[in-house]
Amino acid sequence: MAGRARRTRAFEEVLLQVERRIAEDGLRVGDRLPGERQLAEQLQVSRASVREALRVLETLGVVSSQAGRGPDAGAILTSRPDSALTDLLRLSLGLSSLSLREVIDTRLMIERWSAEHAAASPAVAAEPDAMAEAIRAMEAAATAEEFVEHDIAFHVAIAEASGNRLVAAVMRALRGAMRRYAIEAVEGLGDTGALQGDHRRIHAAITSGDAAAAVEAVTAHLAHAYPELF
Image (tube, rainbow, N blue to C red; front, top):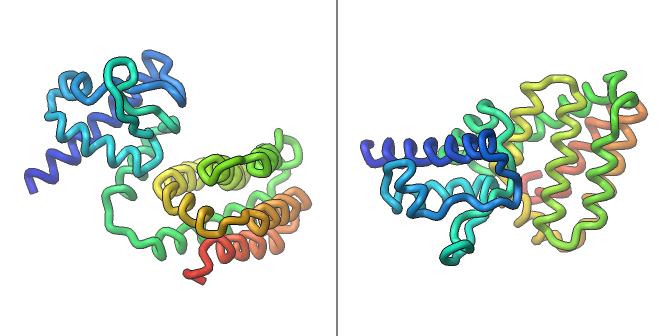
């Protein structure tokens, strides 16, 4: 138990350090974090604890590790922790023993609700269309990683369009925690044409105010993405 507590503390300290640097030093996506030795000295933990914490952060899609020395050492920030709530959820999801079945079931409930309420929201037509922008970016994506990055943006935009900030935060954390699953799913499918068609149908239903069609389209989309679970 004591070893697990120390590992959890190291993870929390590294995550707090990332937040602190984002806030104080203007760290942006693509910037490099300090190397293992420097982080260990700053956080007063072992390099092994820092290494383990960075592996967890990489799994959650927050950083991307890169081997190297000198200026090339240190992990790259790949996504910004948006809030303390998002980070707490990411921590919980990343360290628990949730199955993919549990994660997808939860995502299905959230996305069906979000799509239904986004379609019923009068604000959707009045605001910049983040969903359409994400669709265009997905169509231009050259890799599975790029596709998933914009796919996440699309689904988070649906949750944000629902008007419920807590639902949007949960979706953002959930998609960040399952980023690797999503990349593997896209790589397994090979052709993203069916998924892109799903996105266009979801977008059309929401922007036309057809809540029932939006819910149906979201359900079909997840079935296409994870056929083994449906």
